[in-house]
Length: 69
Ligand SMILES: [Zn+2]
Image (cartoon, rainbow, N blue to C red; front, side, top):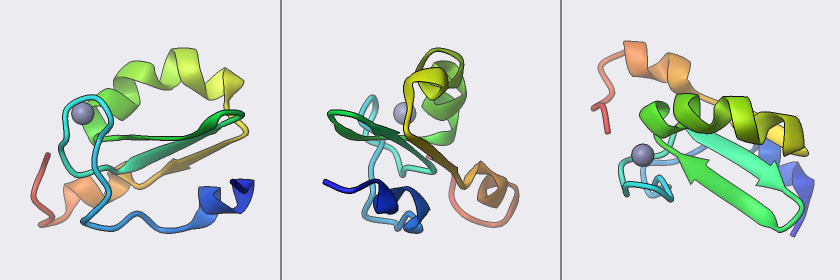
C-alpha cells in the first residue's frame, strides 16, 4: 500500500465502501484506503479526514452531468 494512491483519479469502477454508489472521495488511512460517494464523503469527512494521510475529493464532479450515486 502506498499513499501515492491519494492522487490517483477515481474511476467509475470505484465504489463507496458504505453504500456501493460510485465513489468520489478517497480517504488514505494507515490501514489502507476507504472510498466514499459524495454523500458519505461529506458524512465521514469531519471524523476521518483528521486521521487520514491523504484526502482525495472529486465531489466537484458531481455538479456536472455525471450520474449521482
Ligand atoms: Zn455512499
